Length: 129
Image (cartoon, rainbow, N blue to C red; front, side, top):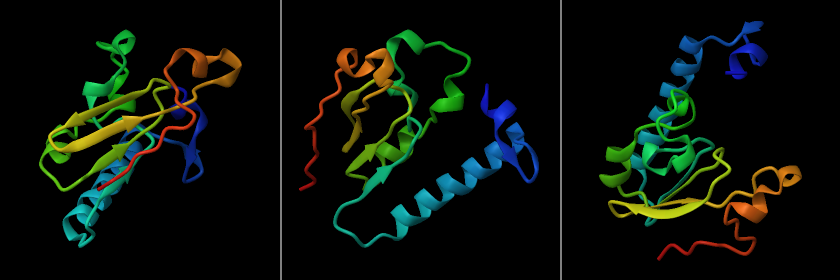
């Protein structure tokens, strides 16, 4: 992965262990805020995919999937999250896991015309009731 050849952390190239450590801190933050929230509605927005269920068909089975997608199916299905919006994959989906809407609406690479092929909807919005 290019991340570990390009990203510096603490003055040196980022290591897998550091990446995983930061990921645990971030998901801990998300879990804590979901649990402590008194809001009527909860929307989570992340860069990477929150579940392997939304990995594009042409990427299923790739050894790299866990670098871009996590397995938070239980968190999604068993929490008060109304919607989880994510990016990174350049593919678009609008599905439901448990009672949570899992959504991605990405333009992708314009220079590659991905927005013309991936189902991107320029006027898409979500309404939380």
